[in-house]
Image 1 (cartoon, helix red, strand yellow):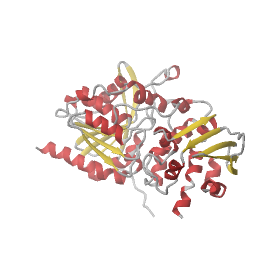
Image 2 (image 1 turned 90 degrees about the vertical axis):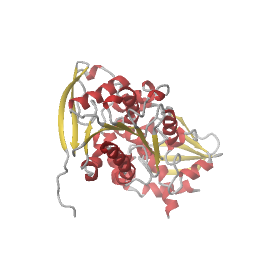
Image 3 (image 1 turned 180 degrees about the horizontal axis):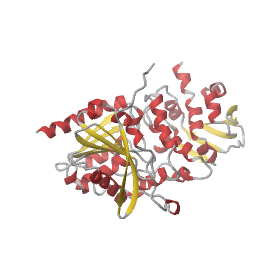
Image 4 (image 1 turned 180 degrees about the vertical axis):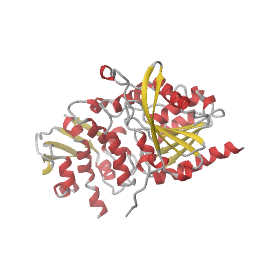
Length: 121
Length: 286
């Protein structure tokens, strides 16, 4: 699973760690029928796991597997290049307490986009 | 290594009154010829047109003028701003542009605006056709569908500059160069508290032009429209709908560009703009 690469992609990026240095949270990333829990401590990704029973999270990003696939293309097509683009066209739902997301929006966007680097390689 | 040089841009302040309220407005200009008045996007400022003001191919034939709206860039908010919530309206925006144009003696100008500017030029074409040469709408639309909660743009639980840049960052095309992308975002990071949100009041709520577009007479005031394909705030579909409702309007969809064409990728943008400017000059010499 691509998102398992998040700790390596994020934790080795000094500028990104600096951008997220005040964020400690747990969010849920839903890819189709699979839910993943991502834990962040002061900007570092500390854990990425498939959600078990009764997962707890602060905010969630839900989209279909096909949507995430297009989002993570090395050069995404229009309408799939940003999580807000996905929201705009009804392809993503944001849920929960959005304050940590909105207060760290550039950081979270960059974390999610970092997976595109795997496509380029 | 690049040698030091000074850009051929002049920046000055005008003091003027709009409906008896005094404003101090910063503007920049370069070039001579047909007046080309440029309008920045919501929550940003005139620096978005930095490349255009430096483009000799344009400034050879056009007097390019860019101003910062009150509350934006180096323009001041009016006295007493601390006691009011800033909210842009169609009337205030229209009066501002026409007052600046008249004060600077911009005779029969071309007005080019992006985003909120792309919306208001449609209103200008409708209301002030006789004073304008033509309008160029970048990322123009008649109305928008709200897709996020704008209260986050002015909220103590999120840093205003960071969240405004975070909201608009995805509107820039993936192909745009990093330096221009981050300069464009920097302008958003420098916006005053609540100003982007106040501009969006016009853009998303008050300034709906859906029912008025057919009142535009493009024989009197031609309407050119350019829209970047990666814009999802004002999408190509939104621009297409507007263009179809304005008899005679010309729309071009620009590939590999987003919501801030003149600022996010000036090199690519000029390839779409130059043919329109040539057309305007050709109409001039007829």
